[in-house]
Length: 533
Image (cartoon, rainbow, N blue to C red):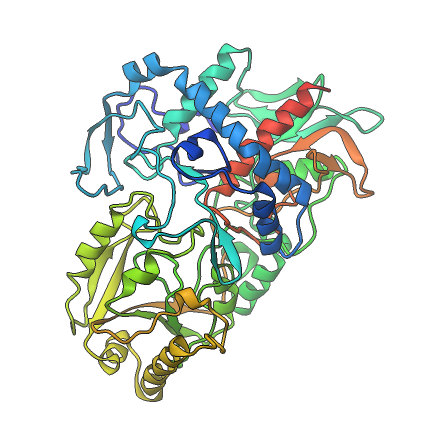
């Protein structure tokens, strides 16, 4: 575990965001909090089925059902604990100095640094819920590309994009006041087992050496993923490794650094458990070309000037993009861009109008895009909280030929670019719809009203692990770690990103924030299970 001071500035003096970049969205279903916001209740079986579908069945459906059904009660309990510290919150967090703010709130002047009221983190705008634009009048779930999405999260943006530490410090305080003891700066190294193989403790390394912890009931492994161990990533992320190797990467330069090095995975395997079989993935999001609003079902054109996929099948865009010609990829829309963006599905990284007046800010910036300017204009983002830095360059032209040139298409590719859009418009007008790739009729909007807008990205044939890995130990639906003969290891449980059976190919988002939401829910459930042993 990292030192508590690495997450919470208890003196509120540095102004720095100490929560890190490992999640401020808590994905959950049917909490009273969400229902009071107008989101739910939803059919939990339908949501569980969507997770299983996106993973191609390479999951433990019971684990996913438990998450979907229990995440709402978990979140309501989470909020109940936070609410119980109201007086202390008002005293401690009503005037917090912050710098390097990242959140843009339309109609509110948010300075780069200053004093902010962080005493009620569950209130808008400190806590947002990703949703479609209200003007689109969508119903949930949103169905697009054969997939479904729901508005099922609490996004603790605060003013720095991730200020969830102002919640968690009270959760930790509550546990301490009720008998829990936290050993920060201790890293688990090996589990202790008796002669029968039952787990009865753990040995950890701390600042003063090794410490043995005896467990009277059991051990719950919750040490995160293995993104910080290059050897594990190279050996276990098989499909991604193959793309990387073909692109010239090696084990030593393929992955990013990180302090989460698979400690729980290793301890679980050494105790007789096993990591779930391939495919194993990571938190790869989006794909293709996306506008300042994030990943949306706008028309996409590859380097040859050709449309290449069902743009509404958001979970497929990353893998599909890897198989396209290397180089330029563009999104294209027209003066009616808002009609599509406002009702886009709610995958992670997709448009986010939980702050409904984001659309006002987006429209204002789009109006500033100068027609014919080859430099384009940086438009404020509408997909993530960190809007001061998450901007996208948009280009505009009066004709498709001019837009092709501005985006960088030349010769035959430029001609094909125009022809592809003309054919797309024919499909939009056809009673048979998209007979090429099957995009939903609701998202087949013609590109025929100038000014024409576009943006560009780059496709490659290489893939690099990002953020966190998503594969873990094989367990039963009660999260009891299983041996290689599929019998349980008595006293050993897993939660979070060391728990397998959740994602299959990699991260999937019927709603954003479900990785954090699963960690919290499965941790809550594992704690309840072990407490009853």
